[in-house]
Length: 376
Image 1: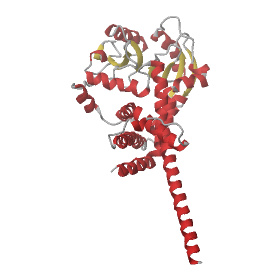
Image 2: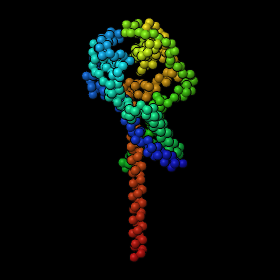
Image 3: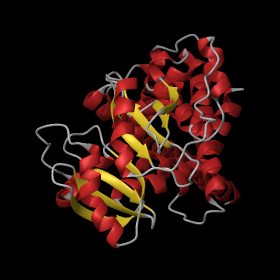
Image 4: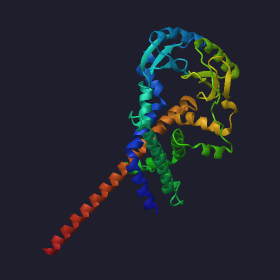
């Protein structure tokens, strides 16, 4: 039975090895992707933190004259929770503008998603393939790779647990052994120690694509609340945005506005996403009538069922930002582990195969020599 699991362990590594290395390296780069981006282009991606919170309407009014001149309008405004990060406008021509909120100055204009961080994201999700018809299939393929990683880890755990007697002794690092034997020990020890968090990271990655809400509901004994709005809005402009912003802040006074999605149809409402102090991303949604500034629908993440809260936490967990820089450095290591496991596992298999071939050849030579001596 153990031999069968070894063969399955190897077969999975051969089947998905290249994709595991790809998703591992790109995932490691994403952990500090925004920091790397600032290092590469500090002029475009780093600002001096404003001395006081900028007024959203005033900043957009400064930029709006240039937008009108170029016959453009805003699709989305992103306000980072990093104070030294520029605001990012996504426009109707699929351009993005980096804005200094302290002055309203346009720091950088580029095509949507062409920056370093989103280049790595496209690699992680779609292998840098831009064909829109292939993208859904590629997402399924990357989710399947995550599932294979989970199965690979479980198979490794079964191999370690077979037999149960001596399983802890098998984790002990023994000095004085060959380099290949030590590599096997490190491969086994790291696989066992990091097995559960790696399974959780792979599972949360799959959850961005595959419907796993029922699993969260079963685990938390609660039903997930839908984030949706069924009420129509009325047309509005930037003059009404100040009222909408005030409405959002009054509805959730302790939260900060992080995303504003501007309506692209007359009946569509304005959508504002807000982030509570104890959250790592904006999980509260407010739909506001763009013409009147009145609140239509509120989804308050702080009052959501446990299933929703754990579902939202998967983003912070998967990206490694759930405990600040400490968890990010740990996640950087764990993101690289699938690539290291794949490389070391395939090398160990090749080394064993080469050793068997060498022994077989040696035995054949010895047999031929023995036959020749008897014949003479």
